Length: 346
Ligand code: SAM
Ligand code: DTB
Ligand code: SF4
Image 1 (cartoon, protein in one colour):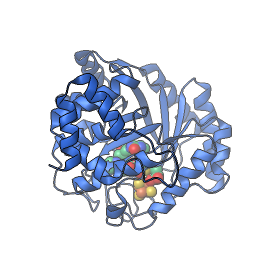
Image 2: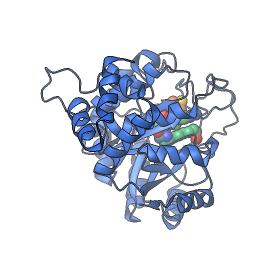
Image 3: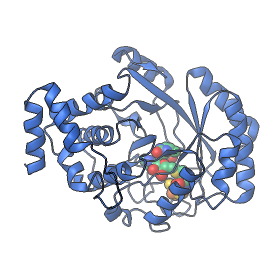
């Protein structure tokens, strides 16, 4: 056990009140100036992930209850507005043109199709509607269509989110103008593992798009994928990168890799579900005010693992029977799960 882990464990053993105070001092104190070290260097996040499971979940619960209603979960529904044929080489993605998967390419949906789906999502209880496109980044004519979609979805009274790839100067402002509340752009994994997963865009490109989103006044939705064969150290690296964004993202999707036949990552050794739960807990502790979304991979998860994710601080899910191209639990299964756990949707 590392020194930091044993310090944290000792704190937790001192009792709930003092443990919370001391851990807040030790782990959650933000750095005030650029000259100071990052708030969450990898070893500090790794020390969290190394905690005994119950201590980690206890700590996550303390943070979660300090900032959120522990029984409320936000619902976002996804739609793929343009599917497949993507020029990028993300090793997990069924929409990359270069991999032979069963995804059928679909040109951009019409405004009507998007609005009808958004209205149905709202009627089912979703509060946010996220529009995704299989692009390296949008062209100007794509932005014009997205602007129409965003304003029409916003007019339904839903929060709007889009994930369209890398943005060029001025595009984020146009989306903001149309009423875009959130832009999703993931870091995906730790910097040192990144090149094994994607080569057609680099980490800096991603940070650059996040900066454009932030400067345009759009909320940042940024997370990653676990279960891609990364080490625990790399999971700590991803969480550290996210937590050290200044400010950290308002919304943090933690995806479990959905293994799709034909993609390079198909056949990756399965991740222990408790490691996934630990990653959620680390996201919660390091980004206390963020909405932490239990994202892709829920269809393959038992109710028990999902319940542990909520206990670890997840307070958002993708809702509706499809993610972008792969399956997600049916709304009825989620309603039954929420009922069983006494959760209410927001
Ligand atoms: N093309 C845009 C981009 O990549 O920036 C937006 C859409 S892309 C599909 C959005 C995110 O979905 C990716 O960054 C990745 O984190 C996630 N994703 C894609 N395929 C996945 C899979 N098989 N399992 C889990 N997450 C996945
Ligand atoms: C995110 O972090 N996860 C969502 C959303 N942002 C766009 C996408 C998950 C995609 C899973 C694979 C698929 O359905 O194609
Ligand atoms: Fe393209 Fe996005 Fe898939 Fe990467 S994750 S291949 S950029 S659709």
